[in-house]
Picture 1 (cartoon, rainbow, N blue to C red):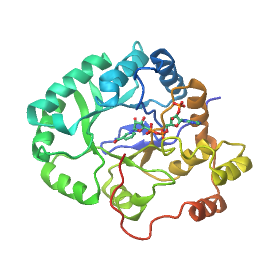
Picture 2: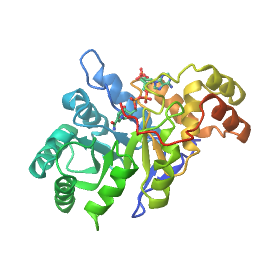
Picture 3: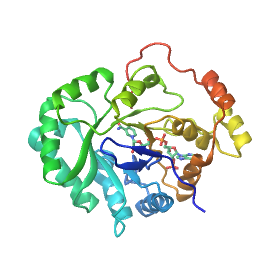
Length: 281
Ligand code: NDP
C-alpha cells in the first residue's frame, strides 16, 4: 500500500503534497533527459505531484524534461515555474511565460514565481502575473528568495492580490528563516517552498543524520527531508535524476522523528538565535 504524503493547503484551499520534485540541472548537456523524465514520473506515480522548474534551468532544458514527464498525464500535476528577474517587466513576464508553456507542452502553469528580486518594479511584475492569471495561463503567482521585509513590501504593492507561496533556501544546514520568515509566513498563510532541502546533496552522509537514520532504518537524505516535513506550511522539493533515489526520498514521509531526534538535530544544526539575511544560492 502506498503511504499518504502529508499535504500543504494554499490560500484558497488547493492542496499539494509537502514533498515535491525539483529539476535544477536537469536537461543540461551531459545529463540523461530520458532518465530524468523517468525519475519525475516515478515521483508522480508515488503522489509527489508538485514539480518545480524554471526558465533559467538549462536555459529551458529542464522545462522540456518536465514536458516529457507530464505528457499524457497532465491532470493532477501541479507545475511550478519561474520568470527570471531580467524578464520580469510587464510585457517580458508574459512573453517568458508563453515560452515556458511551449517548452512544457501545456496551456497553463499552476504556480508562476518571480525567481528573485531584480530591477523591474514589483508592481509591474504583479500586474503581468495578474494578466496571465486572467488569461488562464497561470493559476496563481508567487515569489522566490524574498526575505520578510520584501514580503511585507510585496503584500502592500500587490493588495488586494496576494502571492501564493515564497520559495526559499531552507534545510537543516540553513535554518535562518526559522528566526522570522517561517513564522511570519505561517501566520500570513503563505506556504514556504524549501529549496535545496538536501543542501544540494551536502547533507547526504552527514554522521548525525546517519545515526538518527539507523534508529528509523532510514538514510541520511530521508532524515533531512523528514525534518522539513515536521514544519507546517512547508513544501520540500528535493531533486533527483534517479528513480531509485526519488523513491527513497518519498519514503521520508514514513519517518516519525521523535522529540529526542529533534533535540539531537538542534544540537548538530543549531537554530538561529538572531536575524540573518536570507541566504540564497
Ligand atoms: P537538493 O538539496 O534537492 O539536492 C540535490 C542533490 O542531491 C543532487 O545532486 C541529487 O543527485 C542528490 N540527491 C537527491 N536525493 C538523494 C538521495 N536520496 N541520496 C543521495 N543523493 C541524493 O538541491 P537542489 O539545489 O536541486 O534543490 C532542489 C530544487 O529546488 C531544485 O532542483 C530546484 O527545483 C529548486 N531550487 C530553487 C532555487 C531558487 O532560487 N528558487 C535555487 C535552488 C534550487 P541525483 O540527481 O544524482 O540523485
